[in-house]
Image 1 (cartoon, rainbow, N blue to C red):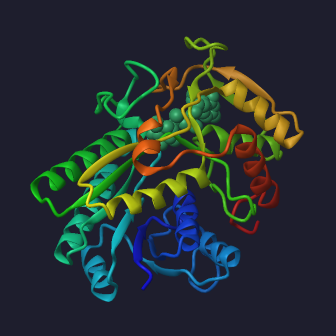
Image 2: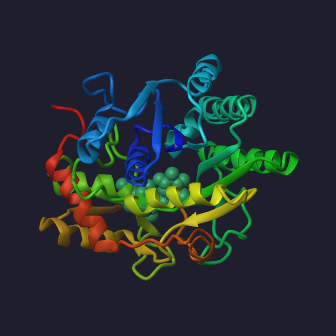
Length: 347
Ligand code: UFG
């Protein structure tokens, strides 16, 4: 029988791509999401998941649920027999987390504790957690491997990722029947090649590529490049951008790893190649055939000069490697942006 996988935050950008890959791989995903970052579609489904259904021609099981609601989680686990959980739900805006630290710790930490307690109570002890390269803080060396010191990040969002990693590690140490894979994402961009699902930031995008895509499509006038005096080739920040479909496939590989009773494992999900802001602008100009206007402004607080992964461990132990390059990431992002100039909402 097909395995049921709980996907928390499964209506979001990364979540919806994971749900799609799970379905393609023969799993039965059960999605919970509280619509904090997702648009409602018809049939009580988030629009992102309604689109996933259209792509794979299969229904998606969905329930509106907030991970901080312990009673609702209990109910859910009574209803379904899960073999594992992909835990992606959480607040994720770095700047906002500095303004609202308690809110970030409440949702990300208490939400995760409730989830882990519920899993434990129901004997579901396999989890894949969506962590972030932000746990490395300012890199002491590059590329970043999984042994690089962690905990150096300065904002509550990043710290919440680090604290959750620590909680899960301690749990796996204390109870040997727990298995966890902590995935440290680098910078996911792009969209499914159908152009039907993609990133749909609400309000002004915080991240580079959604902003660049909105400039290309004419929704915003110009990009602000946050500093060109970093110690990088062209002075702008360098990041390891990874195609969101590659990232989603990394989750399927992680689920397989749990089957080996792996204990607690940590993997970078990146490509190993860094690109600067200006290289990204150029790549997007090429993919879209449009000019992308930009102005250089001050550095953004908390940004590091360069951040890119050593992805070798994931290749060795998960048999996973990013397959898509920069051109494909930008082409797919552009297709999504062009077909959905206002994202999932209709106006
Ligand atoms: N940038 C701009 N202008 C913008 C937005 C970004 O110049 O309008 C620059 C940034 O300064 C940085 C690069 O583009 O050099 C990438 O910025 P993003 O905001 O897209 O990504 P970050 O690397 O800052 O943040 C990402 C995730 C976070 C995560 C962090 C560290 O969004 O969740 O990586 O892993 F915490």
